[in-house]
Length: 238
Image (cartoon, rainbow, N blue to C red; front, side, top):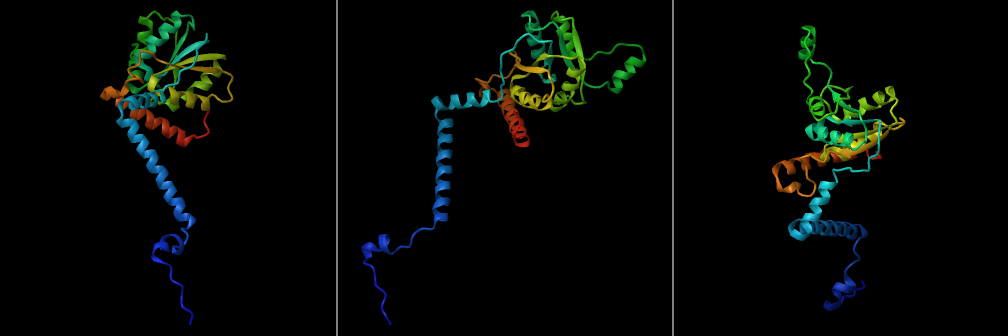
């Protein structure tokens, strides 16, 4: 029987070891890349000079800001609250539009009982705020109960079609404005109304310093979660 040739000890690692399988190399490469990305991410967060630009970019990822032009009406989202009312009043003063519209929930049992007794019950904070700010022409857009962004997106197209609107400025809270832009891009597709999204300047969310307060951190985490969910559910939305 022929004897197997033995490799010298100093040549074992080079000539006697078999070639590594491509799959093993590929797996190791992937883990190396992931480790590198993780190390870079930790470095960005750990080094102050790199951390703040990274956090600011995360904050501005929630904000959609685009030029606004004169429009038929200014529409306020429910989540914009008093900041939205202030933004609308400023837009009216600057000549963008003379008319403002707000979303309202369907009449509740409480509302209907006040109406049955012949009393006006108007628990609509934004409408009162707008009138106190000198905006007399305020319209109402009925929406589904709960006032979600998706509900507003579904209610807006038929209302715009009914009033034959050519353009609107849609005011939203800063940390919701990017997601609002995506929702309106979907729901207004096929309709002739042009929509310009305007984040409320008086919003409590500051994309440049959100990490400095608990309220800002909570807004960032919730806003980012909702935005990523919208991207996951509607990856082709644009």
